[in-house]
Length: 89
Image 1 (tube, rainbow, N blue to C red):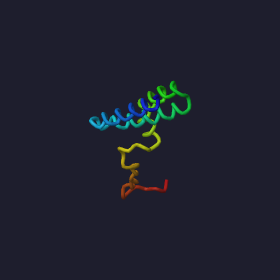
Image 2: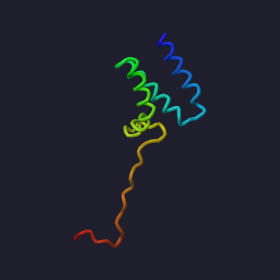
Image 3: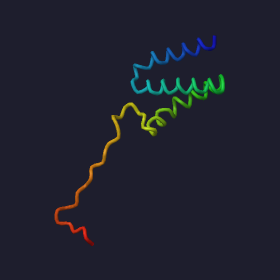
């Protein structure tokens, strides 16, 4: 019964969130955090993992470079010294 409730809650949150495109990442991170917490620590871990995943998940994925919104790291362009600059000091 508890598994059905968890699956139904996750399904409803994923269906309701496409209205807010930015919130879908939070819903997915919350669901993943809840699943991991539920596996490790049971019902208390499920709630704690879901809260942690929803609040800190986007920041963690961004810091790991897994942010789906960015197309990749931007490369720095090298600056060239002016034409008359003396490099032999």
